[in-house]
Length: 559
Image (cartoon, rainbow, N blue to C red; front, side, top):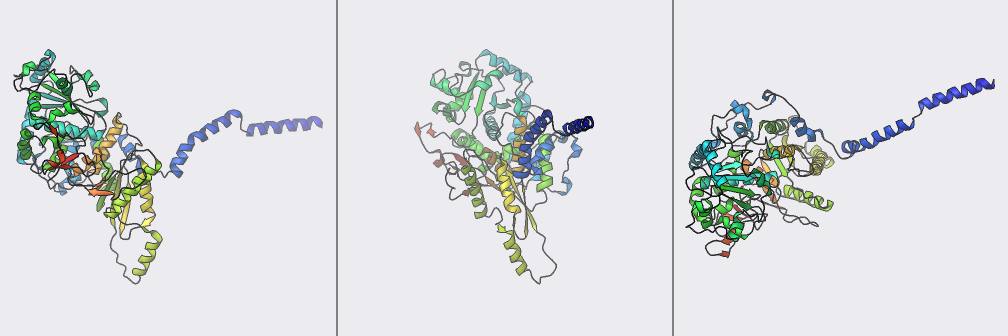
């Protein structure tokens, strides 16, 4: 009897042990639980929205161009050549955005001047003749290796090299291209890995990409303020002088022009007439900049007549050059068009909020959010917010006894462009919990990286896509000092509402101001009068160059 009881007890113990969690299984389940916590927080607490993954899904999708959902372009009247800015004859399938962009934006009221169009055609011919892998390019490379310039070369070059964020890079390429137009030089772009496959080639039957075997290509990344080969250092150290008697053969074969935001006095002499005459004798100029230095050219006597012929409406410089130069590649265009057709196409009005937040304190985040809403409501960019219960009571009292017919609600889309998802989520929750009467409000954010990753190609692709979506909206609110916002408004041909800089402890009052023009701001202009040899206020010299709305030291072009 005792043996049977003992056997039964042993059997029950085995079953109990089999049903229990062993140490290994406990550790495994604990690990799964810990790893699941971020996902649990993301989905159930932090307000996850499937639309936030849109760009990721699109960029990871492979397929033919037939997979695009595009509007019926034959039914939409648009000038796809943008008044002659673009040249017909490119292979449309290799770069869909070149001729399709016009259909996704409102038609620009600013036509390019016939003179600008003719100068672009001349430049295209020059670039084809002097571009990479041509005999004239090879001749110039051989001259570069001699260490001195030559006056008998047909082709002279500007080599642009990147620095800082994507917005800085785009506006400085445009500025460098304008300089090339003014000086009859050829612009070549140092395409680092994170910039590959962002934009199509802008010029026909040639390339603007600096060849990888360029003799100085390994030195470009190390060029900085005070570099021995910089133009400012050469002047300061008296290696060269800007005397009119200096011939090309007496000059180095190249110089580095440092126009980064920290440039000093001798670097800024680049904007003086005598120095320009000297620089035009050099065969190669290496350029690094993160500022939109275009307005300074409009203060230079030797260029102003040409500039006025190119741009009778002075605030259209980037509007025209940006639309001419920058055409997103097909993978990015897929991201843009699919998001637009899914979320923006059917809206009666598209309102873009471009919010640049520099994370320091949570209070700063709250202040910036309050400033965005204060500007948006004060200037009636966004519909006023009424609690849903109050709205339903009010509408019930007013509509009592009315007929069945009811006007269709208008759809407004709020597009939030920001590195951070918190603004989108807060704005979305604000409007999803309220009623706006006869309007349907939708809030979307195409991407949020949470921090700037300029060194990553995927980050730059999303940044370019965001800029182009921004430029497809009807009303813009942009952040102060933001090259990102400048590009969006200039491509759109709109004057945005610009936020003022906010303090850490209070919201700016007034919160924003309407931009006086759509052209970008040059944040750090030279205030040196080259003839009088004294400091002046560059924003008070001529009526068409004025101080920027939000960056008071900076200047911009106005009409």
